[in-house]
Figure 1 (cartoon, rainbow, N blue to C red):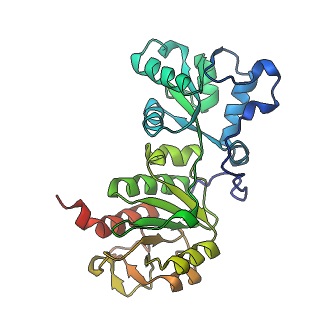
Figure 2: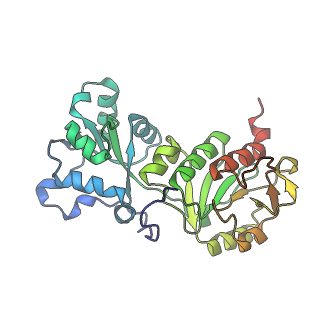
Length: 299
């Protein structure tokens, strides 16, 4: 299983920060700047590559994403883009030129780079033709007040970035309101999680909380939580989800903690018939979530 790096690092806050602040003046990013980079040793390249580490993402409140679709999705959602990066050989493509113009107009930097630099930043031999550096966003849990009919997904200590990204994408497809990360979760802004989300990282509000904070929020706001658990006595297909505010999914190996399971208004079980002892977390999330959202999804 792939885990994100430095999982014990904490997010440094919501303020936008530029990794270039310690560079010599000539290397600082300038709003609306268009810059050509051909050297892999350029300090800007080093800083962007550093976003592969969670501690650097936390310090800067930035993350790296791959592909023109991600940049387009971010622009549509008016998400702050620090840099758009593309290979010089792709500069004449209309879609890239239009995206670069929008990023520049919004105050971001446009970095036209050599293929060697693109490979260096992406850490791939055949990289996407466009990369982006984006601002991270989190919503305060205390500000979340689910309205009737709104359903949030909560993930307890999810460890695999692919599972997290796929769960974000699934929640987006099912029409969930957002995703709450409970406890020590992998970073949703890692390259792997962002890639697996297929752009849903920009569509789904994200909140994060400790287990204690989540339980206090539930009690204070009378949140109705339905959790999945192997000891659940009720088939997930037989439950009335109309009053539920949150579907709570457990850790890949251990499931829900005892305090979280005890706090659920109802525990449900996904019946299985084969030899496997459990389902993949993202698959389980999709099964329960689409059942819970079925009335809203019926044609």
